[in-house]
Amino acid sequence: AHVAAASLPLTAPPARDGREMDAPLFRVALQRRLRAPVYEADGVCPCCGGVLDRWGDHALVCPCGGDRTVRHHSIRNIVCEDAREGGLRPEREKSGLLPARPSQDGLRDGCRGRRPADVWLPQGPSGRGEALDFAVTSGLRVGTVRETLNAPDAVYSHYEAFKRSHGDTEAACKAQGFTFTPLVFE
Image 1 (cartoon, rainbow, N blue to C red):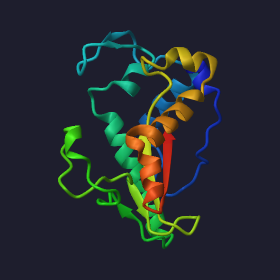
Image 2 (image 1 turned 30 degrees about the vertical axis):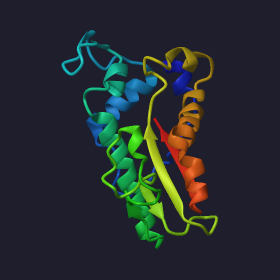
Image 3 (image 1 turned 90 degrees about the vertical axis):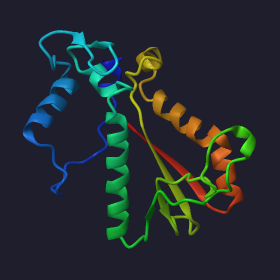
C-alpha cells in the first residue's frame, strides 16, 4: 500500500518561500518515501496503544496524537495567508454561511449557523463566493489500506465525495449561492 501511494506524483514544487523542511524532518520524509525504516524496531504507540511500526506509517495516521488536526490547520493557515497576499480577502473559519443545524439532529451549533469553509473567499474563480474545505487523510489508514493497494488515489476521491455529501453540504452551499470546494491532502 505504501509503494502504491508513493507512486503518485508529488504535487508541491520546491520553492524558497519560508516553508522549507528542516534537515531532520526532510530525512524522515525521505526515509518514508524510500520505504527505509524510520525507527529501529516496531513498538507500542504511547497515544493509542496500537503498533508503532518501524516504517512510520502509524505515526502518520494515529487518531489519538492530534497530528492530523495540526496538519489540517497548517494547510488552512498557509492557504489563507497566500490568499490574503493575493488580495482575495479570505476569512478563516467564517461562521453563518449555512443555516443553523436543525435542533433534532442533537448537535450543538452555537446558533451561528454552519461553517463549511476552512477558508472563505468572497469571490472565487467562478465570480461567486467559495468555501474551501480542507481534509487531511492517508491511504495507509486502517480502513483504506486494501483500497490503496489497487487504486492509490481512490482514497482521496472517495474522501472528497464524502465531504461533498456529508450533511448535504455541497447542495446546501449551492442553495445559498456559493461554491463548496473540498481539498484533500495526504
